[in-house]
Length: 429
Image 1 (cartoon, rainbow, N blue to C red):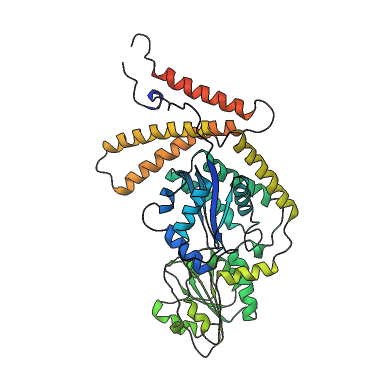
Image 2: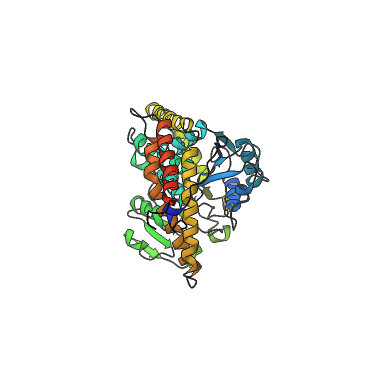
């Protein structure tokens, strides 16, 4: 009698001799090393249809995750060769970029950097809150796509958890909790106080913050989203064709959309009126040539970063010490488990079962749309991750009791022996 279908009947991978420990490497560019034009170019290359070339480049990529925000783009890789992977990444993403635009960190340095990012210690605005959720979402996206497994899945979970703990150890003023809030505060200083009239292009979080900052101002709104005007006591919704007409009445223009092309150009602005233009979009919403107009002061995300860095308080020593402690804990786990080859084998075993069963299920559902097939695939990946997660958590425990190596051996024994036992036919079958 053959082995029954389903997870219990699948043979474990023949683990054999453990392969060399893979490497953890980070290749990134941020507001600290590259201007916004360079970051936009890198973002476009990462957004190309299909899997980025870097993931099939040198260094044999085993896992990958990408953090992409308005101020940074970082690629985290688990690979056979950190040096080859980093070189391949910079060749693919950095063509035509100025020297020094990228930074490379490996091992504990990469872990430390991600923990500092999640803790708000590496943002232009110290303690920025939005980045923590962005780190969490990057981990979720990679896990759902199947590119973050034992190492990166654990790393991003740890970064989010440590980020929350470390943030609780230091206070941040309400106006410094996000780049947008900080930018709006200083844009109003440039205007000289609350303007009589302002133009807001876009919606979302920036619109919420603007509603608090612009109480009493007449706000002209150019937004595809309905209901935004309810946040402003004096709101006037305008169509695109009335953009220049509204701009002529305003001392402050704020743009924050996700459009891939410019929504504001020089021809949309008055030539005989002083106006402050705040561009919080990434990619940029405002044509840079707007800054050449004599009476216009244009500030993009790079200008906001310069404002912030010139006014950033002394780095929080206690928070930095906490980052160091968290880094040592996670790096110790990585070292003790040799980047968890046992967990990686279990993940591969579980993934082979998931893939086989998903293919079998989808074969029986030939009329599903591409979207629905994607939902089934994502569901199967989430289930696999949740079933394996408790075992990974067991291995990652720190403190007294069995050491990590002992827990790894125990886990390997359970899955190896359990897999073999599951293949034995039942008595009387």
